[in-house]
Image 1 (cartoon, protein in one colour):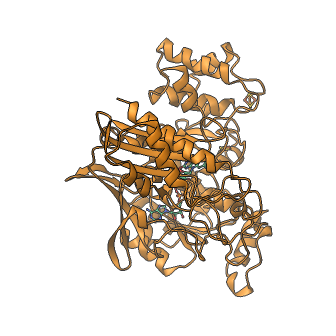
Image 2 (image 1 turned 90 degrees about the vertical axis):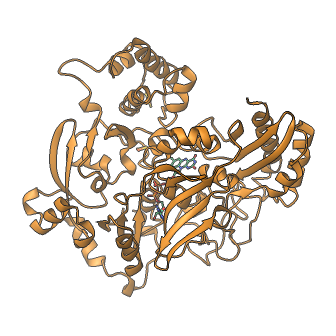
Length: 327
Length: 212
Ligand SMILES: Cc1cc2nc3c(=O)[nH]c(=O)nc-3n(C[C@H](O)[C@H](O)[C@H](O)COP(=O)(O)OP(=O)(O)OC[C@H]3O[C@@H](n4cnc5c(N)ncnc54)[C@H](O)[C@@H]3O)c2cc1C
Ligand code: FES
Ligand code: FES
């Protein structure tokens, strides 16, 4: 690994100033993504600003919202009593990600900011518009088994790898941000972005903007939730396709439903059309199948990932079946 | 190695090149005595953002297996390399060096983490336990005994990581069934495929109810 400078900060202001003043400086939280990328030479900051001393580890109830600090560890959030009882879908999604060792290091903010696992992005000998704009997308006509089927552009077909974010998009979370221009709140839906012609930008944060927390509004999704992750081995692997399903069920009737899909797009994919279709309907496999067909309308395979065109709807149906039988 | 593959930035974007070359020759670990006093003071006071950024050697105080070490390391040194290369504690293994195998699992402040993805400088003031810190005098830790009894390894390369992870798995309360053990041990890969015996060893220690 190349050498770099290291500083610790303990106030938001110091954290923001440090990266604003120095375009080659970068924050480090758990380090599980950044250190890996630095070892590979994919990311080469000249200075790391350690933000772990910032007071952002709280998990608490604030009015009718659950507040989770950006430095709360993935394992602590997953096992937190408030999270498990009030937002069990988030707990399930976190448990499905990485391994306990990594969850003990990884933070909520870092999880949202983690980069794609596209092998062309990781290999500095390969073209990649995300790593080096203008070099082309190696995956487009290359080995693209893990890649996106929704919202792609000819510049990038990478997927966002997070499990946690799939639950957060389904649960209508809000991202709390502070930066050089003050504080702002970003709806989760608007946090990550599609590649378009700027795939080097994963999200809408501007330089110097620090995630301080996420908030999840209270909801009726405690009983009938399920995070289903399909992967190459049963644990410790990234999703081929995953579905976060939260259903408000009354008898057989779907009062309301929230759906997110992972492993299929450059951003956590919210299935709004399917949600609208399912509202008020009876929970049967046939209805779920119809909703899945709606979801797949604009899907596009790139060769090696064509199997996702079948896997995605099947995963959605299975997740809904499991969510709606669970008591 | 990785750096060579990078396209060369124009000369004006290489302000630290000279220093990097110099650093390659300097030893990674130097005695505390040569660390500038001003840096030490800043670290003690935790007024970190006011101190100059550390580029070369960062003072670091760490408790490893009960013993306090006052060290000085480059920011790029991982906890794994610090243990193995600088302190000669080679019990902790390097498998992939990228977070994908679990061979480097150690406990930091009681939690299992991957030492290959942990920067040593970020562990300042923390307590690290490695496989070398488990035995009590001549007595092996119950988990070590159980791995021997159940043949929980073949080549043994993944074993220190498996044992550190297995102990944490019980302490966390994630060893209540074989299924749960498998899920919570999934971060430790064993290329010899000793999984069934590893699971048996952990399940037995859990059942025995000994303090781990
Ligand atoms: C082997 C392996 C397997 C994995 N498997 C999975 C998986 O199955 N599912 C999954 O979801 N994830 C998985 N991960 C990824 C893991 O979840 C992420 O690496 C982790 O969440 C990143 O968090 P961190 O705190 O370590 O981030 P860091 O590595 O510290 O930082 C990542 C990025 O976030 C930025 N950042 C950190 N905090 C903030 C903040 N508060 N505001 C703004 N920017 C910030 C940093 O500057 C950096 O650019 C895996 C990782 C590994 C190594
Ligand atoms: S060496 Fe750390 S996980 Fe493989
Ligand atoms: S015993 Fe050989 S890798 Fe596990």
